[in-house]
Length: 446
Length: 125
Image (cartoon, rainbow over all chains, first blue to last red; front, side):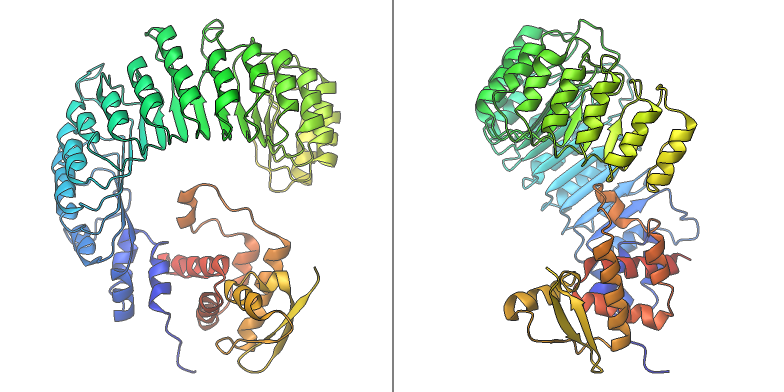
């Protein structure tokens, strides 16, 4: 046997990324090549779902201490000594902490604030609140460009406006902030968002879904964040709808660089503004919650959809589901003017065969289509879509007039199909078997 | 469209390969951009036995492109190797290591991913 080739160090380092931390810890002890390669690891995940019983105490700290080039650290679960790990991460750029509800989180975050001053991105998900910890991070790590905080667990339960007051206020110190995502935290922002918008004109992405946005913060964003490319927000249930609509009108007029906008039931005047001012828009999501009252989003109507036909020619993805009062009169014209659409979600609306004909005529690039529960669409409408949209990959047709014969048409005309749903239709088991035979890669419940 | 290029292994074996197949290798792609496809490309770091396997891999994956997952978290998965790739890697350890070296030298990312994932799975046991 000849001499076995040894692997280059960078390849061993590359292989480490596929191993969980305990295995990586074991591998590094095998030989010096592995040890040196280990030290070069840039990304590490510590997850308390692994079996750590047989490992020496403080092994996590030992590992992190040896990593001279660690850029990305993800800590999942109830780690007992985050502060100990935090002391050894001076090169850290990206930090993610998920599912930690221990009190030690605060001292952990404060320690990161003291040592990982080059931090660029922070993601905190499903952790206990830590106003002091977060505030410390935002004050000391001024290079942070991306902040994502979601699913906060408030021990006090219910609504507590002052929970992250210091943290939100300190966020205004991040002069390079580009991405701000806050989801399901239930915080009342008062003026914090206004200050952030004023001091961070570099903001490119703002995602405040399920948060209590205020009209003042929308105005501040419209006035100061001209570089905004992505904006997602939800209409809060107990506020002055008129003022929020006005704020959104200003955003859709002033933030001309918008590429993605998510806002359930965005009122018509905003759609008019989008068509006139936001020609870079590629993704527009107006889908409303399925449980919403039928009169909750009447400010978005066929007129607004018709107005959209006048602009936003770069639109690739359009979602407008769960709006039963939206029908063909605006939609067909909108579709005719947007041949670049690749994804279209119109589930649970009143669009019918006229819209389907427009889809079949115009959308040659369509890859994803949902007509779920569109009861106005007949077999003719489905036929025009299936026959003409040959690039389709995902079709959601549950609750429609779909039939066995139309399944045959799908099999003949849609060679790229990856996913199809036909629950609550007349399609029978035999057709489902035919689909499985024709497209082996398909997966759905029979 | 059906143009081909000649690759020469370290032990002098010739391989006539379609250009679009050969260009799965970034190293070869760059060489072709600089010097064209008329001259044969010597690959002194890859034996004929291994180059044959590499060409087999590139041919299959050019004909059957696998869509890349949109989820970044899937990059670290090792349980999603397609059956053809699994069979491809059923070789002795020495060959597997040589394939890794070749994928690294020729800069064929999907092959490097596959072979390193296979090694990772062997370590996981």
